[in-house]
Length: 586
Image 1 (spheres, rainbow, N blue to C red):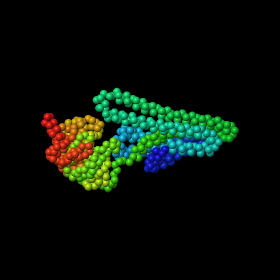
Image 2: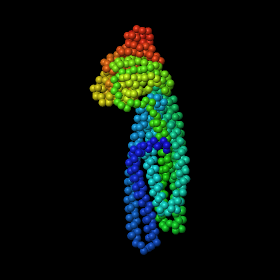
Image 3: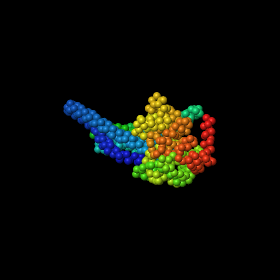
Image 4: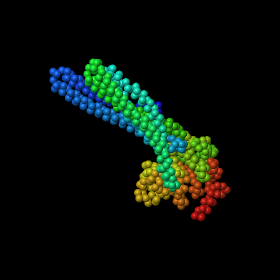
């Protein structure tokens, strides 16, 4: 139960619902206990009538009818109160489920890039769905039935003891055996439930990756291989599930068997006590049998409840594992920050924690507000790492980054990111309309603003050719449109944000040179008062920049304007001549 203690804060949050549920349960149990008493009273009346023939039978009939009506009335009241109990406690569990899912999702949003490199998407999805669902079963049905069981036990045993302490003792003899069995089975369920949840996550992760990479799998004709892999993984998961089910299935029969033994004990010892005159009425035996049967479901549910608790414990442990992780990137400045856009790197070095690859080495440069910087270099030279550091997806290993003269880690993280419009190398679009994908940069944007941004990104004409134009729903990750169109929609998203800093990470690689030229000319006007950084492999994307830096293995090997760099020997001049000749040949 140690892991489940994390949920206590939610019980405190919904304490009034919790208390109302407990009170309702107590009152419902009290009303439900009228039935055994009234039946015992009816039996005694019949016994008295059989012993005294002089008693008017109509009086006995009236008493029996009166008792039957009371039984019906109290049963209806108890049933209604039980309904209220379920409405209160189960609804509370749904609120807690909502809160837990939101907490998990917020943690997902706050966790750093390293976390997502080390964890598989399918596993994370399983934790926020399957695992949270198991936890809800604990805070809802498990808690409700536990409360119901303990209250019923407490009240029923008090009633039984007042009637006959000796018969109560006899009828409760099987309970220690029951407790021991529950303890042993619960431990085994906890162990097997943890293993099963781990395999369930493996299946979710595998299928998620297959669905995401289905085009590659089909292209390489690997369907049968992946089908066999899934069958093998599913078989392992099924085996673990059956191991868990076998243990869980023992609870019901064992509980019912022990209740049956208790009934036999009551009949035997109660009968002997009636013969000996220790109890005065056969109705007492009937009353005790009803009490024992009233305990049947609570006792039988102990197994089910114990199983739910153990599964929830295993699930909450998996959730707690990452809820306790502190994000690498912290917001160190709570006050609002105003960003103008000047950027300076001072002797910056950066090493990726997961791979230990040194991406940048003692890097220094500066950009003033309204200037454009182009970064070129070979693949793996550290170009994208610079953009990741500016948006604080990572923190520097050594050195310092200044934004408007302030250390970047002393600027409000959310204001910093809100001041940046970024077009990533791998354009990601959501399964939504094209309009909403562009509005992702500005949710309150009007139709005119969306279209204006699309025109600057030279994608408006393409969009208008679709049947539903801007309301066209894209497939997952924008799979229904071409790579160049995805890049341009992503550019439109950054344009509409109108942020003081614009980061373009090789975002024109999938468009032709003519379209690229048009987009760059549009950006020249749009970015005249913005700080812009363009990462590219093309000289055509860099030539109009105020300054250009060439990276090689994380170091600046060339720096200057286009005219300066083409007139000196080096990477830039060679790249320029090569791309110029390719353009002439095409």
